[in-house]
Length: 426
Ligand SMILES: Cc1ncc(COP(=O)(O)O)c(CN[C@@H](CN)CCC(=O)O)c1O
Image (cartoon, rainbow, N blue to C red; front, side, top):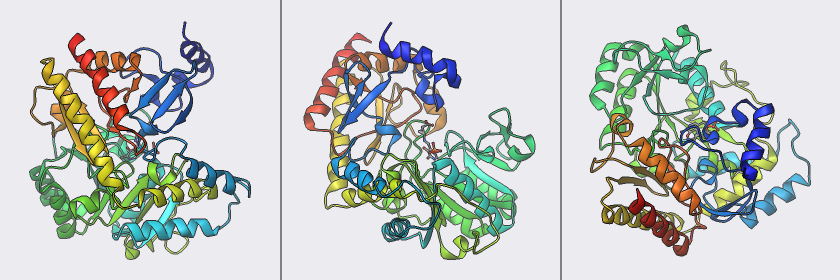
């Protein structure tokens, strides 16, 4: 029995499923989750000291690499002054100002402590601002676990949602319409039918929770157009893509301006931070200024702000994203060549420093249905074989992968070499 197995057995006595977030349980790939003890740069080290090249990066935040010295120093120096006060601090204003300066669509921003809080709050704000109840989301997109967003498509495109989890009241799910990502026709026909009842669309501008699925040309523009035509709020959930695919997020990359943006992950630098922001006219509906209530004890925690601010400072350097994108491209080109060499049906997607791996015969994967048709068993075999070789990929075929600035050419080559051996043995 490995130390991780022992730790997992112990955890399962006290924590449901032994984890504080389901995907960590390896339920998507089988086997026992690896317990990590420490991390530095591109590497994570398990409880027995084994090193892995990490492509999860705490699900996106660790864009600089783990335990970046300047981030750790900023956290230590801020923590020594106290951890949180439940009162305003200057560093919160600095963070808000930085986010507003980096994302032109954001005039004002409110900090929260998770992506779930950010999207839940943005939905309430959009509903309060428009006075409407219905929302549109897309199948395969994940926006955290608030009730309105744990909803799957009803039997037909225009039928209302049904809960995707017990505990979500049918009455709540009924206000959520779930459409097919990248299906612009479905968006247009839904709005033609119900547009004046729809408070908002919430979309991942690059879907990173059904593996990595970029928007097809015109899709994001369609979302913008129907929201303009029917007076609905366009929410880009950039919890994952924000500062990951570019300094101005996916909205900057694709040139589509949302009304509200949700953020998380990178803006916390690895500590619990979420945020939602947008146009002043909408944000001023928020308490204490306006009638829409939203609050949080540790929102804007100074220590978390310090980690996030230092991270945003260090990614805002000339060439940072070109280098990150080039590394990711190099990794994927190597993986594809190895798979082709071994005759394995395999394809990849990439946007900036995030990527998706698909065991699929498709030349390119752009729809949820194509993701679902991938060879899940082959992914599981690949995942575990790579893990054995010291490469830590996302333990699910429905997650994106992430490269950091700390990954070296040697790390990328070692990953490709390991994959070449694994593909041959599949
Ligand atoms: C686009 C997007 N929006 C919202 C969320 C929810 O954020 P959190 O509440 O987990 O901080 C997420 C969370 N992402 C997952 C990874 N796919 C978190 C990992 C987990 O659930 O443990 C997200 O990707």
